[in-house]
Length: 125
Image 1 (tube, helix red, strand yellow):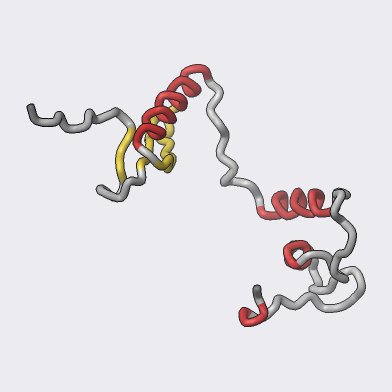
Image 2 (cartoon, rainbow, N blue to C red):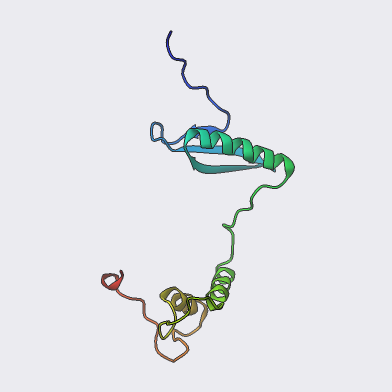
């Protein structure tokens, strides 16, 4: 007897075809949601989970539309929080912290008055 082709599942599709990468799409509150999942069975399970969450009104919220200033301020607050491994830091803090300070400041200097300059691409690790 010939093997039956795989059953199609609503809201689960492979993109691009033959790649082994499976996606889900579903509608909740009149909006289309899409997620990249991975394997086929994982996609089927995630689809069922998301549909259940949509019915119960507890879908995860998207964090895409966060204002840049709010993101940078939240990042800096987290950066300033004391951690157990804060033993030695650079003069102006980490590179990401320096870039964030530069983005929020009207002038391009750090606390010690020295200019914050992005490293050349050849100097990046």
